[in-house]
Image 1 (tube, rainbow, N blue to C red):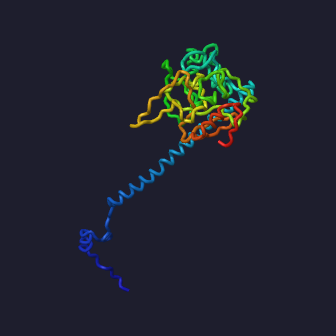
Image 2: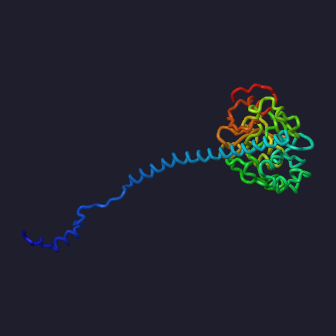
Image 3: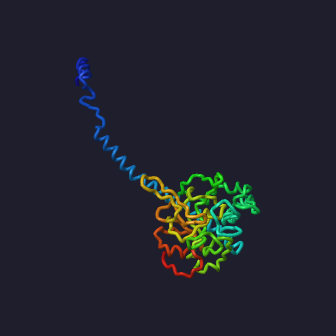
Length: 314
């Protein structure tokens, strides 16, 4: 067996390296072409276009669930109040009616009465009931923003009342009547002026009577805070859902139409920022989403506690 090794040719190796060959002979390095890059960008854009609406819908579903939870807490508080006092709280306490949407009078709302049964005893103890809702001594309560009274889907920023005071707004309101009329002592709902409705007076049935529901917070229509027992805390079902005068409606050019206030006693109906309708508390304690396409007459019947009308499916 020969022990001779093959001769090493220096000039051959050097020439191969200089000519671009050698150990990586004929190997080419290439990147993406412009067309390939554009195709990848287009695919990513399509995926993002499909994904973002789904993420937004998931977020809105979560906000709607939180809103339902808020209403459930309010409904439980109403029932706890009723069990303690054998009647529902008065929708608004005032010496006389009809209630005017002005910073005048006593006008203490039903939401104030719920504070002790909503684990807000300290806040309730701060209320000076010898003074009205708009008294300076009650300003700390009026300016308190309660998360349980705000719908997460409502984008309204902190709003100022007529006096320039930043108030704690409410996305929910009690139902005082099945008819579109001013708030007064003749309300046929469950929460109206100086009311004290007992459950035996809800003759239409607790599962067919609305206690409260959602409303949009619209600064142009006037907001007085959840402490005030006017249109800020009470609405009627005589108006179609999201069909009232206090809804900001877009017009040509993308700018919202001006809100025209019919009168100082006008209340309007229920509304929300959820697609397709609003959520309501029924007198039996359940929370139900009601379509904005519901028959107006059916909605009116649901807002009345004892009109003895058959509702049927709704």
